[in-house]
Length: 240
Image (cartoon, rainbow, N blue to C red; front, side, top):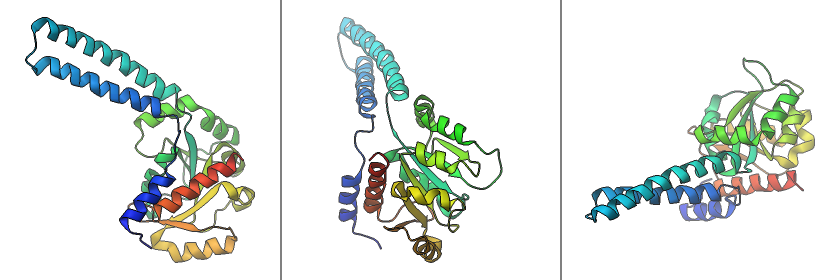
C-alpha cells in the first residue's frame, strides 16, 4: 500500500490545490519577516546613529502597516474551498485526520451523532457561506475551522454548501445515505485503517465508483497523492 517516498512527494505536489486566495497574505507575511529583520539589524548592526534611528522607524512603521494588511487580507481576502468531513463520531483517529484537509481550504467537521444541539439546514448553509467568519476561525485553527452537529434533514444543505465532502465509513454506511447518494460525484470516501476490511465491504455494498482511502491512527492518509487528486476531482464536479 505504501508508495516510495519520491513517488509520493511527486504525486502530492501535483495534486496540491493552487489559487486558493492565500497568495497575498503569504507575500505580506514574508514582507513582515523582512521588516522584522530590518528592525533587528538596526538594533545590533554597527550603523551610524542617524541611519540606525531612521531604519528602526521605517521597520516599526512597516511592521504595523504590513501587520494590519496581513490581518485584513487573511480575514477578507481568501475564497478558500469548504471541505466538509462527515463522520458518525471521533473514534478511529478521525479527529486527527482533518489535518489532511487543510491544504484544500476550510475543513468543516459534520457530526451525525453525539450530544449537542443539531443545526438546521438554514444554519448550516449560513455558516458555510460566511466567508469572513470562516477565515477568522482559520487563523486560530490547527485542523478544522468548525464542528457542526446537524439535524437529520440537513445533509442536502451541507452537500450543496460544500465544495467537496469527505464521507467516513469507519462506522459503517452513513445513516443519511439516501441524501448523499445523488451527490456522490462531489464525495470522497475514507475510513480508518484499523477497520479497512469492514469499510471496503461497506464501500462495495454502496456501489460507488472509485476507491476508498484509509488513514492511520495518527490521522495520516495513505496514498496521499491519489487522495488529493480525488478531492480536486470532487471539487471540479461540484462546480461543473
